[in-house]
Length: 254
Image (cartoon, rainbow, N blue to C red):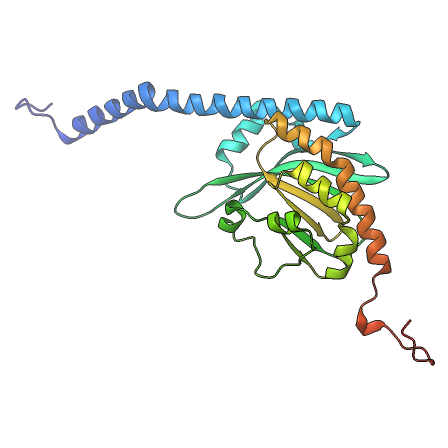
């Protein structure tokens, strides 16, 4: 306050800073604390579920899953990564490498939002063969993941609920035998995506491992993905595209 009894500019700024600081302490700080606590609980439950699953399967925790709760919570809240690896487990089943893990895909722009995914990948050597099975529901349509082209398997129920694509349609029809199609409907509940990409059969769905039902689904699907991996390898080895078939001297295609 100056000699005339009026507040000068510097005093007014100090008063406003004190007011804003007081509002932050009483209103914003508790909100941030609540967000931190909720995220910490989700991460703790996810790690607990994964650790229990790893124990039942004889798997090991991925390095990211071994971070402390505070480290993981801090990364989850403040990470600016657009594809942040989260936590997972890995091991061997029937001589195949199996990984079960989660990750977050984030948008970068005026408005950021995160989409949490979980995935299981089972190794296979069917490198030249690829396919995808995606549910025909509104979620995948909004994600723009449904292709205009699809393969029909002459299974009315399966064709109604799944959009099927492959670079080798006839090979895929050999792989997706009725018993495997039945298991896919049973375990996936038409909620996630199956795919064969590069060197692994994959299943992924939105969610997190703090959901015990989702963890149980992954545990029950390990056998299914191993069966798909084996069927894909066998079918891919027997696949012979028309361009490489040769006619024998007698005119018989061999």
